[in-house]
Length: 609
Image 1 (cartoon, rainbow, N blue to C red):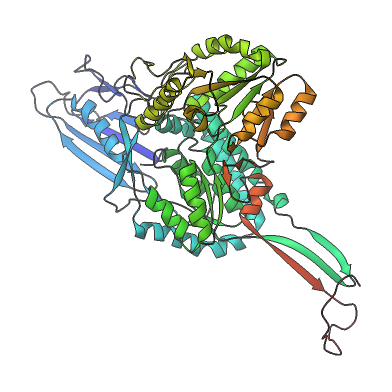
Image 2 (cartoon, rainbow, N blue to C red):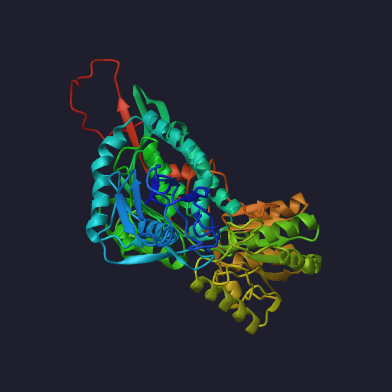
């Protein structure tokens, strides 16, 4: 079922029950959806099921209220989705308590299967191969996502191909209007998108709202396409001759998104491509498809024609399909180095443009003249926010000179962070995405200890009351880390801060530049000359001065480098426009005299003579 397009009506015949209103998508560990007057002491059932909007109405007056032993009541549940499906479910039971069992089970059954989005329709996959979606806070299965079949993936690309001519020929002003409406719809549905992200990905609601908002900013910037697509003109290159350039869409483009930013990363991709006139095939992470599916429906509501955006699901086979399909002209990817290198190499070999944003080991260099309180707060927030599952997480601190004495205070601040399910009040960081991710993080921490690092704060055994089965790791700090340790060389992608020490700024710069990654870095100082030297000498794509996570706003471009990026043109901003368009140069001559030549021109054309 699709978020926010479901309307459910439950009618009880001959039973007196009082509905207990619940909010949209009732949250984890809520009371029962309905309190039955016959069974007021009934225990909560399915307390973690999230349901569509529900209305419950007692049957109209007529039959006498049900009393135990008088016969089974009947329950009619009609569930319909305005986009894709309709189902009427009947059952009969000997007890009104059946409500508490049947309704959650029915909702779970209906919502469990994520659909494909092909040619403007949410369609059921015909696959027999499904992937479970888990709530990271509980590890309970909350849905299933299909591995799209070859025929379904071909249908999605075909829809892109069929729609491209009309979409690319639509005026740029009309495309702009669609995305102006789209950005407003995202704003209107921001909290609902955030709830979906928290359910599937685990991050806190506040952080999930930030996820949506940073993606929204890219959509807003895409609405300035009339300026971003401007070409160049050089008139009177020679007598009666002008040269000018303009940008044209490529055709069918594709995006492969990671699990850690379910809204932001897809919004880096398809809005920029589509506003330029391309059609788009999106493959969200199979772990967090919900936000992308809702974003697709909102784009449809904004007026995007059927087939301009298509969504498939899957794992390796879907990625390989995208890399190999001859109709796909460009691929955007964000994720791990292993996947990113594969996509870049395979896609490039098949003649596609590829931008592949990959792993990172981002360093925060702390100078002894920095504002201590501000710097420590910035380090803790940037290292442990989103449970460290950010490609721009500040996962490494380099303490220069006397700044190493701040380490006990850094540990004390990290200890105060609250670990909980993302939808719980006051949570500072939620769970990791999966048990495998937790195991990997804990293993890398253990490797650091074995190789000589000091375990200053250990969050591996954190317990979260009520969510004992969740993938939680608390803030963890490793001190006395050396550059040859595994915990330093590998991206941990969890709430772990590794701390190195350096005697001078030059030593710190050497540490940063010898690391192969080049996504982001930050320096904390009150000295302008120090900051200037660092920003010029650090061989990293994005530098923050007293800014711990220097992700540029979309009027600039994301500029990760070295082992963090493969490709020639990066994400959003002007570079994003360039990636999704082809530059065409036109040289024309209109002579003042009669256009008909009096004799053939057999000499090599020269200009400027």
